[in-house]
Each structure stands twice: as C-alpha cells, then as structure tokens.
Length: 365
Image (cartoon, rainbow, N blue to C red; front, side):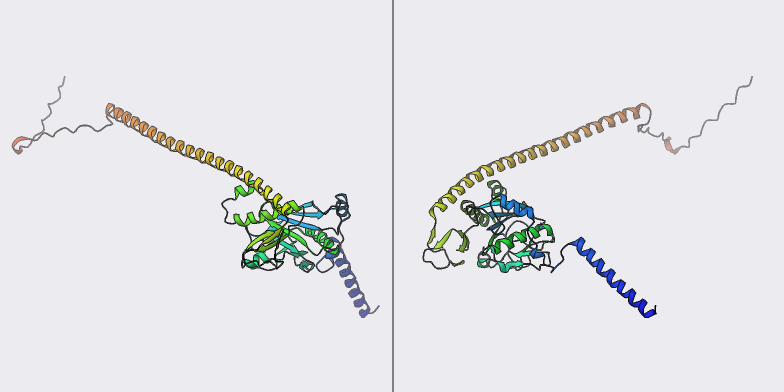
C-alpha cells in the first residue's frame, strides 16, 4: 500500500471519529440552539395531566408571576370556560426588587398586565427558549417607561427578565405554543410584586408603589371574579378592568377616563372582595403595629437593663477599688511599707561643727 493511500485512510478515520464524537455530544447534551427545540412535543405526562383536569394543550392559557415568592403559575382553560391552576414553577432568577420597571437599563423586571401574541414568541433565544412580555405596554408607555426585550426565558440568568431553568422554559414554551396553535390569539401574563393578600399589603404599606399595587390588585380580583384573564385597558394613567367607553371610542391612556360601561354584576363582586380585603388589611396592619410596639418596648427595656447593669458594675468596681486601697494603706503602715513622717533635722547652734564622740577603749579582762 502506498504512502498516499495510507494518508487518505488516516484522514478518513479522523473524519469518522469526529462525526462519532459529535453524535455522542448531541446524545448527551440534547437539543442545541437552532435545532428545532421550539417544536419538541409536550411530554405525555403533561398532556395526561391536562386531560385529567378537563383541559387540553390547545385550550386557553394564563400566566401569573409573583416576584417576592419567586413563582410562576400556568393556568389553563377547562371545559366550562373558566381557568384552573395547572402547575407552579419556581422562578430561577429575576432582576431588581419589588416595583415596576421604569427605564431601559434599570435591571428591573416588569410588573403589570401583558398579552402575548405569536409574534412575541422567541424560538431562537440565546437563553434556550423565550417569549417577550410585550413591555412597554399601553400603561407603561402612558407613564413614559422605557425598555426592550423583557422576556421569560431559560438559562437561569436575568438582566431585567424572569429566568427559568432550560427544562422549565421548554415545557412553558410548549404549553404557550400549543395554546396559540389552538386558535387563541394571545395568552395573558399577570406580573405581580407578591401574592395579592391583605397581609402582604400590610407588610409593604410604606412602599412608594403601594397605590400602583392597589391598581394591580383590582385587576387580580377582576381576574378572580371572571375566573380567567383580566379584561384590561388604560385611561387616566390607570389600569381599568371590564370597562368600555360609552361612546365606543378607544380609551386614551393619558386622558381622563370618559364615561365607562361595565358589567354591574362583576363590578359588585369585585367591590365586595375589595371591601373584604380592606377589612383584612386593617386587621393585619393593627397586628403588625402591635408586634412592632411590643418589640420596641422589649428593646427599650433591654436597653434600660443594659444601662443599669453597666452602672451597677461601675459602682461595684469603684467600691472594690476603695476597699483594696484602704487595705493597702493599712498593711503599708503596719509593716513600714508606707510613707513615714519626716523627722526634723538637728541644726547645731551658731554654725558650730558637731564632733562625733570618740568611742571608749574596749574593756580587757
């Protein structure tokens, strides 16, 4: 066999080895970017769970996000047209703290109501899979808020988005994809700072965003009453729910709200729930203030005890120091260790020289 043929054989073996290595990598790592991960069917266990709750992959869908609890809920429509909680996912990461996103680059995750259309789905995200939340929406724009590409995505890394694990977003994306393919024009995302409970509002009662969150709570309660996505719009710089202009004209987000037409039955139920929430809120605030007052009283008592202890310790130290000083003086005088009283020197009169006496001679026997 010639040298040229040997070289060709070795080159072929290297190519085959590389192809086998790449195949092994694909088997270990699963889908890679651009390989159709957005088309992966829903797991059979997911479809079975949907069927068991009276829903289906193509039925309507709603997403609720709670920042403080770091949870994302997927709700699905069931046979009677209402929505039921399907699954809760732990949010892997989100940016910023409680409160809405205000401007581009503030690294804050949005809060509010967003309707996700097919054009907002992102099958080629750099973060595995994603869908754009549609920020800024009508409300955000009315308040001059800025930002772009605010997503729910994978990779567990956030710079203003809500980030899930790749496994989680693969399932959530597939659920959203099937919902849109099932004839639904959109699905809704409701992003809240925390669960809309009286206790949470009481804890955050001094936050500068409290009035905005109250507006979101009205939408949450409307969604609860309607048992599905909130029917929202914006006028007068606020979200309004289950409302239409009496004139039939579109609502102007910045202008004062015109006369609105609403379903009076829904309004009555929402108002009743708000009254219940406000009563519970007042009770929660009173409980928190009582706890704070008790803690302040305990802290003041502890501080007074600390000061008294310091004073007693100082007094004891001074007393002990005085006793030891007295004992030292006593023993010093007893054994000559103390300071003796100086005796006056004998001064010879008239400057005479004092001659020492001559000792007597010893007596000899």
